[in-house]
Length: 78
Image (cartoon, rainbow, N blue to C red):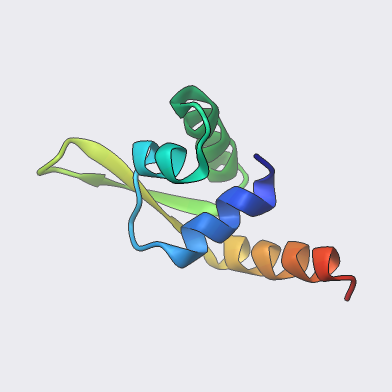
């Protein structure tokens, strides 16, 4: 899984948690959880706690959206 994969997943899905991302990307949960933590520390995602489920869910920040656009453009050869 590359950064672009996770950013694209977050951009396309509404309020996913780490387990949903791991299952969708077919990656081990600890791998996704650590990647999400790195993205959080880089300011590329925001994390919110769902009090009903006791889980955190994630969404792209403005900086994350810009990084996704940049990485997707670089991959397309733009």
